[in-house]
Amino acid sequence: MSSTTADTTADFCAAMLGAAARPLPPDVSHAARRTLRNVIGTAIGASRSPAVNVLLGQAAAGAVLVPGLARTVDPYWGALVIGTAAHLDDFDDTHLATVIHCGASALAAALSVAPETAPSGGMFLAAFAVGCETQLRIGNAISPAHYDQGWHITGTCGVFGAAVTASVLLGLDVEGCARALSLASVMTAGHREAFGSMTKPLHAGKAAANGVLAARLAAGGLSGPSDPMGPGGVLDVLASSVDRSKLALPAPGASWELELNTFKTYPCGVVAHPAIDAAIDAAVLLSKEGEAPDPRSGAFPSWLADVSEISLSCNPLVPELMGIAQPEDGLRSRFSARHGVSVGLRYGRAGLAEFSDAVAADPEVARLRDLITLRPDGEVARDAAVLRIGLRSAEPVEVRAEHVRGSVARPLTDEELQDKVRALVAPTLGPEAADRIRAAVDSLPEAPDISELSAALRPETP
Image 1 (cartoon, rainbow, N blue to C red):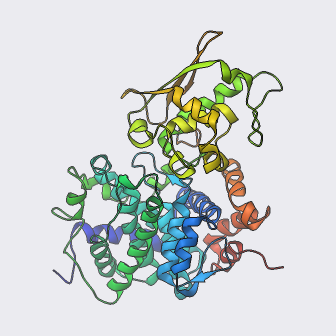
Image 2 (image 1 turned 180 degrees about the horizontal axis):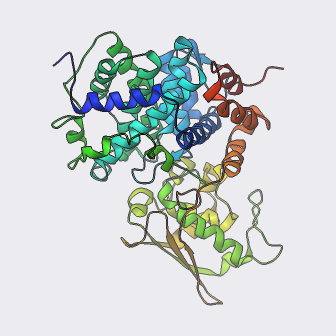
Image 3 (image 1 turned 90 degrees about the horizontal axis):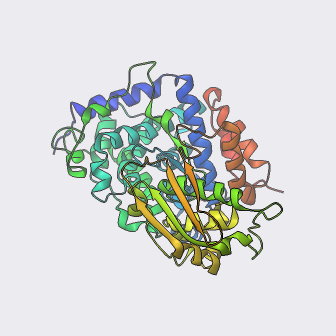
């Protein structure tokens, strides 16, 4: 063990702390604020879920606000609860190249230490941004080998991002931040076996809580292995192939990885989104005038009874990550591409309601799932799919999704993102809450503190 770290780790920390100390470039600031708005929405949307209630039942009281609730908890539980809630519905941001959901642990770390550090709005946003960038840079360095080995990369990389976020807000210097990453390197957690269970979102919560703990211990002088990011360190344990050149933060004026972050249009594994896009397009194409599906009723378009088979040509990650054939509940339906296609065809949409326990048990949805064959093809891009629907009384219908909605090639506009956030937060905080959140987030670069943001995350008192 060593009291200092060197080389790769120190250089990485110097770059991240330096970036946080300067005003964010305009495009990076815009990307950070979009990611922040989205993940605040997902955290509030899941704030009253059973899993979050379980955590809150164990949490100690404190000053950290849980978005969407009047409840405040201590910093450790704040990080754990917020990170879990933000990732719970699988509706958060996604960096497609690594499949990291970077916003959850960065938000949770920032909010958990904010009461004691009282950051300016600009510092809060910068800490969040470099926490996200840390995860994406490390993810790039160990992808695809790390994920292919069965790790859940959001959990394993999230702890480093949370440690950097906390290091910025706690005022650690380069050596202290490097110690934080060294300690975080022995706190990585998360494997893909947990997909479809309550444990998956807990990975993001644990990443946040562990990252903040690492930064606090580092601030107190505790140290860990020397140069954990360097040769022979944790990255070589996490992946059989590591490209450390991808760790370097680009020169001033160059793009950040955070600018490539995207936002889910459906609350499920992102690799199935192209198939859902194709299914919804097919539903529109095949439905007769006046026969649009109504998710609130048991009725469904008459053409569905004519469907004899469904074939989905997709990227090989789809059956690997989303291969559950007949999910028994809403949580597992988020990892069933067949379910996503089925609800897209039946309801013409695929929102939170379509990934509920009730819809997972819908007999017509189950029948459609049985008709679907997944055909993995390495030539099909991650953001593409081809859906072929066989009909008894007509020629087959084929629908192609070339680029999924919400991807880098087809990004959500700011207004489309706002519509998503509005739908997530309105049931908990009311119809005007999304606008308050947007105004607070957009004002962060010049705000003297985060009081406006904190107020926007709370239920309004009568």
